[in-house]
Amino acid sequence: MMRTARTLHRVTPHLMRRTAHEVGTPTYVYDGDLLDAAVRRWIDAVGDAGRISYAVKANYNLAVLARLARHGIGFETATVGEMCRVLQAGIPASRIILGGVPKTAEAVAEGMRRGVAMVVVQAAHELDAAIAVSREAVSERPARVGIRVRPGIRAGAHPSLETGRADAKFGFHPTDVPDAWSALASAPGVEPTTLAVHLGSGLEELDPYARAIDVLLPLVQRVAAGPCPVRELDLGGGLGVAYDDVADDLEPSHVVRIVDRRLAGLEISVRYEPGRSIAARAGTLITRVLDRIEREGTPALVCDGGFTDFGRYSLYGAQHRIEPLDGETEGPPTVDVLGPTCESGDRLGTDRPLHGVRPGDLLVVRDVGAYGFVMASNYNARPRPAEVMIDESGWRIVRARETLEDLWRGEVVG
Ligand code: LLP
Image (tube, rainbow, N blue to C red; front, side):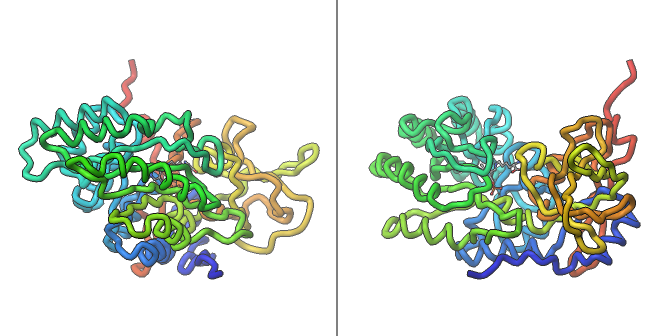
């Protein structure tokens, strides 16, 4: 099996040292070539860039969005803020989906008024909003609407990442879908086209995709005789990344093969919304070691980057590779890698073979291009990190480190 490209092409140790020197730490660095390679794997597997909507929640830096847009793919957004970021990157509304997460009626209306390619509704009030807006709109083409289905499938790398389970907050129960579909089909300015699911994130097996199709197909058949048959299944994202770098990544082609086999002979198109599998490998977080402490049991490195900068260990126990930028890792004892804030739970990882690392050294946390910067916070009044892109145009800051003034923007004293 071919191994996923995970070597950083352009992000050399030299450029990471330069990054630390010029913009300080912690800083996110993105490799443009790895972003391209990951998108191309999806396009090669699906065969049509137009059927891929990158889930921008994974990483919505404007430079990342603009780079991905060159490949002709679409963009899935969860909020008006994400939608406006994509527009701000110079990408037209016609390439954007406003996706199936809980939304206000106002958000549904905003998406439709801006002319996005599709709004996915996932609750009755969103459906009502779509119908209400379609009545007032003077658009020539009916607005495309999808319905998110809650398939009742458990899948995902952590309970917080299981979004398709029966007790999840997302989507219509399958038995409610035919009525929701009919309501849209009989409204004047909207056209239901798509049944959507997102099973969960960090999937390490493919079976959930096949099971989702088994839930969706009877619904497709139920509405087939009506005025608006289902034209598209949107299977969401979910493909995991082997953060330990030991296992092989599942490839987009594996998902597509299973799905296409299940749908053989049917006239229905399939959309995918990958996030992590496009952005994760392209990102590295550089942090500097402030201190080395000897605790009872495990020694630890205290770094200037912590869970406010990269939260995936604290939130999901995700063990990303952490390596010294210079020098070799040494054998036991292993060390914990801690952040600088006022909580003992502030960790980047635990039990790492980083014995020889000293205060002042630089560490790199790998595969943080997805759900890294986007989940950073200002807790402890810490400015969020800078972001740097390295590609064929060279080295450049694509988001400046926040300043102290950024921390109180919009606040008033008394
Ligand atoms: N489509 C929808 C409707 C979604 O909710 C998501 C992710 C995706 C697509 C993209 O899924 P992906 O291919 O990235 O798995 N903060 C968590 C991830 C939460 C993802 C939620 N939804 C983490 O750090 O793992």
